[in-house]
Structures are given as C-alpha cells and as structure tokens.
Length: 316
Image (cartoon, rainbow, N blue to C red; front, side, top):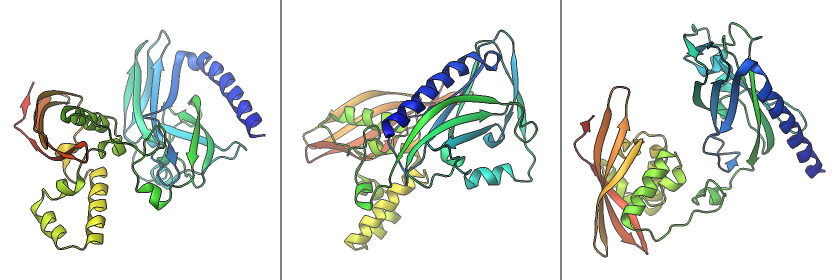
C-alpha cells in the first residue's frame, strides 16, 4: 500500500513539474533543498533555496519585501492531503501592525533572483513522516494582492522520528544519518576539511576535528571556571560551549565563513602541527584577506585542531 501511494505521489509530481515548466508566462519560481541532509523531528532546521528566473523576453518586475514572509508562503501537505498549520513565527510576522517595507525589483530576460529561508519558520512540524512541500510567491506582496502569485515545483520531504539523547550525543553524518568517522588526515587536510564544513554550514563535520575543551580553555575566565568544576559540570560546560558556537555567540573569528581560502604553509613534528591558511571574505566594496594559523595535536591517530590565531587583515 505504501509503495502504491509513493508511486502515485511521484507520478503527480512528474505531471506537476511538466505543467510548471510551461506556465507563469516564462517566469519560473522553483524551490530546492539547500545542503540536503537527514532531517529529524527534533532537529528540523530545513533550509530551502528560492529561485525566481525570468525565461521570458520581457522585463519582470516585483516587490521585494524586507520580510520574506510577505513574498513567500509554503503549503506543506501530508500524503493524506492534510495541510500543516503555519509556524508561530510566520503568524506573528504576517499579522504584525508594522508597515511592510519593500523595494521594486526588475529581472531582465535570462536573469534570476535567489535567497534562502528556513521551512520551519513557515510550517509547524509536530510529527515525523513524509510531506509534500510547495512554495507560493507573491510578487505584489501577500498583504496587497493575494490573487497574483507564482506556484513552485513540489518537493518530497522525509522527517525521521526524534533522535534519542544517546544518539544525539553522537556526531551524525548529514547525508547518511550514520555516525561520522574521523580519518587519518594530514594537518593541512584537517584544516581544509574544517573550513569546507564551515562554508557549507555542516556543524557535525565542523566539530569533528576540533578539541572543544582546549578551545574553551583559551579564554582565561572560562578556563578558571572550568578548573573549579566537577567532571559532570565540565562535560555540561563543553556542551554549552558547543551550543554557543553553533549560535555564533562566541569565537566569531573561527566561525567566519570565507568565500575562498588556500593553505600557505604546513609544518609538523610527530606530535605538534601548524597550518597557515589565507581566508578571503567578500563584502560589497572590498575583499578582506586574513591569515589564520591553526595549531594541531596528534591525538589517538588523528590530527586535531586545539587552537588558532588570526593575523592582521589586508584588503583588496
């Protein structure tokens, strides 16, 4: 029965995708998963990439709201055609009494416009299961004209049951759902792996080769507090440190996401390693270039990052 239901859904998606490519007067609105991974009910930060492409021969104009909730909505349906409720954040934004600020946008033929949103800001997921997701784009804003809208392709979303506490303590591979395994990488490869993970916002991989305890002890205040704690309290402090890193509240230098980077120098002995990398950060008017020095230790067959320094910035 489940197999028949799945085939029916896939057939409907195929027909819908064909019709989608033929309509909208040459303006195409599409959605896709950004950095798709295994999704769990208690870890449902689902990033969706939004794209508006002008495939017509004329200029396409629309209003771009400072709050995407007035341009965008999602219909999330169960296999039995039940529509999920909107998330609290969406309801608050749409019903606020604040003025809606926007700018007029124009897409010339062949141009496209894209951005990312969190699906969980729009839909309330309370159960694991399979869902069909479709986007609705309002070019004249939902608060002004609900009738004019673009309808996207449909995505199939699978959300697994919540991870148990013991499983959550493991480092999970985003693409497979299996525990991540360290590899016997050289110091420069470890640094490359860690920066690549940060560029992709893959926290599980980013933490894989970091010694969080030693990074925590870099700060004199935290270090003093840590040494006065019991073993259980130290473990709790490390978990809190990890959470604050993910929330980007601390150690912001190592959390900066470079557009490009390259390894400049690698030196190591059997137990200690140093890797110097050049990280490039793109801004509107200039490019900031910073040298990062990563310090590594050889621990249980693996090179692990235990500290870092950031040198003087130059610009281009």
